[in-house]
Image (cartoon, rainbow, N blue to C red; front, side):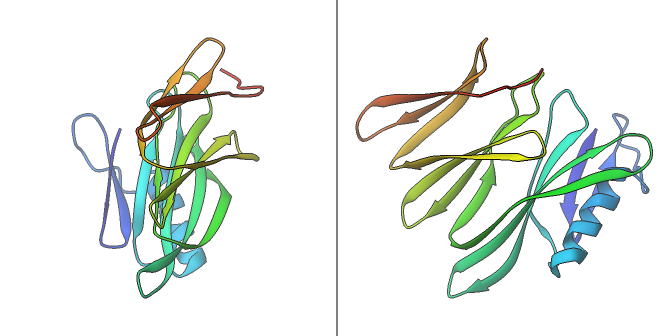
Length: 168
């Protein structure tokens, strides 16, 4: 599955790069954008193994400070399930990180004023704030048990957080 965000829509293609015009992910993205009055997606991340995606849209901007909406989308062969994960106000940027293979968990990085706040979305209902990171160099998943590792440059430390009740 390949998805491309362009001109206010998400176009989804199969492995042969044939467009799937009525794909549930494309319909979900349009629904999310329409819901908040946004014209295009800011970011999109698709799970490597499951039918799960995270979509981010800019919902407002004043002098370089932006508001964002973040959704979790799942789908089967019919209707997509869309869940608003967060609305974030007065921040610089929001980027979905990665999904660990086999788990319904994703990290979100919220940047503002030189500080990156790390959030972990577990499933459709839990959003954990891991706090700020100054000088985030990188992050990755490790396990079992599932853990999130963040590497901070200024103090040369690795911060580890065990994901509670992460279901494979």
